[in-house]
Image (cartoon, rainbow, N blue to C red; front, side, top):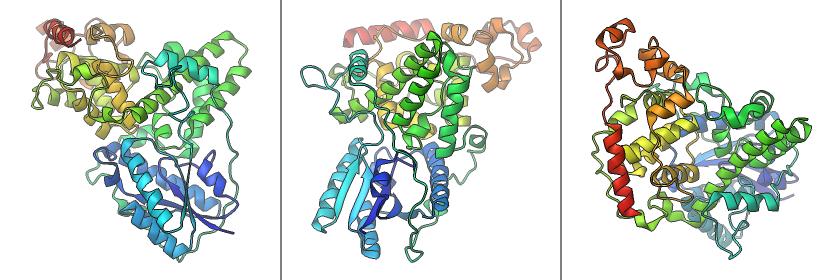
Length: 477
């Protein structure tokens, strides 16, 4: 029986894990190698590291239940693998494929290094529904627009075949040393993460629980409810997908089951709407694979010399701290800081204000989200910021500039979301909650919020900044 190192990366689950499943009949040794510098310049941010710590802890606990254990090492991945091969006598390394530029380059080099040592390296498809080279236009080129991509995926048929769970694994010798999880220093030294524990329980078991609850409680209202930040209508599975605690095939399988079990057309409509969002994630990964330069350059070359403001943009810090004076923006940024996530509708609004009204480079927003989101995913983060800035694939038209006041009035009419994250405005009535600076001095005193003291006045004028943005974009286009 040959010995196989099963190298976990962003596939921290036991069910529907192709690399693990392929090795289950052999003497397999589960390993994780911590080498964030190999993902530079997009190594995991602070919020992602928090999630990673707890997800690894959950994976280690599940492996222990099956009679195995997780071996953790840190440092250069190739060197760590060779060291483990020497210690264990393993002749093979199995892993699941990653598709971002740095890891593709790293994994390719490792494959050659292992081959020089007569060690087999085999990778499997596990994190996407389709390989990036499997979905192409009629001219054999990658799609840059989502709708035809979605239509092609539907014609191909969204794969929902999943591998059964594993009930038992071979033991791993205690002679094989493992670094303690705490030695990876993934958790912050200053406890800014206290509120995260109120919102998240990382790990495969909770990812499955979250999916079941979403289907039971929220799927039937998904298409409508997902636009309203005060309502819990989204699946909140993005971090679970990024770290591989759940696979997209498992999600498709569960949604298809719910769709067929549902008697009403409403269930089918909402199920299709949710699957479309799963494929949107797929689209972003395919774009990154085919256009790796987009991690730092716009996909649309016309934007390479766009006149963004310099890095010292006076608005950037206020935006990051949630002190712009526009409640829906500031509520979103406070939600991000406290919970490591932000409602998708609000992400579009805050992104529009930063890139269009404030003229900050989309990379400034991408870098901030990268460090503060628990679901920071390079493909999605890059794609979405270029989308809202108007310089990427399937980009929003240059004249689409989200007005934070009208968006707030439409999607948080009563101000529930705003009051949840901005306690300074908790007494302000609905007619003022979207633009509190319009209150008179007497009303500010009545509702216990003095603009400029308890809550900032708007730091930028919407009409003028919108006109300036339109002029810049029109010249570029």
